[in-house]
Length: 276
Image (cartoon, rainbow, N blue to C red; front, side):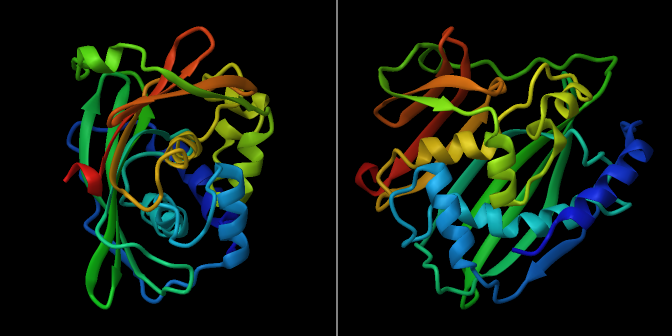
């Protein structure tokens, strides 16, 4: 896997220059494209193991996000991108798969920033990732990231529905190790310091290192039927402080990840071929 350290270092160096986010800030119109992306089979196998996917063919639903992540970093480290890269928190993701991809496919990947909006805790941006084979869109995702900073206004956050509030039936419990952030970071390339060590996490207001949102999401998706899931969305409600014991719960087309104290870390919904 290509090292992302230079991009992460650039993001860390330029982040202090972007701390004051203006209400008139605009996003760059840049679209970065990587034609014929090569999938590293070793990295793919390591990703499947750490996220709990039983196989690598077809590609795990969440894996295109990983191979496109270097493009997203290049967009977010550009001078025209208004938010600091360091400390960005992943708040939601929605994935639509139109056709399965396989390890030997060479997809064309495109990433761009789509929307910037105020959040009660700062400013949130939407990053779009698209994968194409033979010019046909086969996979797409929309991720939101939060740059936390002081705001004078406090927009009301979207409320959860009654069903999202209600605890779902427990399926299984996972013990999440304290070094998960470092292990997943090496596989995914996401070496954001909030995930790596308690000391670096404390610099951004977290008492301990937190699990990657994409790991919690992927670990939940791995519990679904890989042959059927075509549309999955998740909202990251609260960080998983490492180490931790978390419970995966699901019913119908909904799933949750919650802590031993009942705190909900993630809520998600799925649509598969059987529901269509």
